[in-house]
Image (cartoon, rainbow, N blue to C red; front, side, top):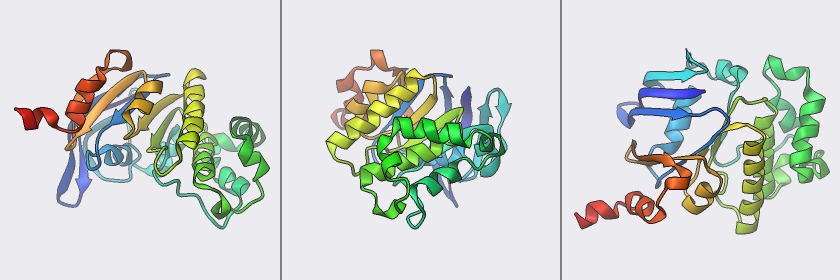
Length: 236
């Protein structure tokens, strides 16, 4: 479904990602975990054309042209870190913006019904300004806006960031439901336990490189945390 080959990316003269070759399976949830500064968000930005890159990105077997509008139209959709909703627009207006790609405009009503079915709280607040929402509601709105684009691959960046545990549980229940419905998901998350609870595949990143790639069912959490916190290097 989605693949990178020797992907390098960064900002100006600073390289953040070093020759990443990854495969994201269709219908699977792939969790990418790692500490701050590992390059996780930069990876998503490279996939969606927001930062320049070298190497190849393949989507459904074809090499991607890194123009963000084209990628969203093709079905590669990102839910960004920090929600980034349009605060002065209503909840429903924010959702309408998610249906901007041409292939999504004809099914606007059905798409809204689906999002409101997943997030009933958004239906209740559909006429409120997005800036009046709580952090958890804003995260739901950002996810709902992404779903309005009818994603073939949904990239979700740090959905638990800044949320209370009870809201994190609710958000991840929705993510698990989307996976069960067959949505291909790439999830960036620092909370390893929560990420492994929904993942099919796991990649651990540090310093712009992948240190571990395994099916989630085979991951040894202690070993994962040793790599995550670089304890092996300290003990060597």
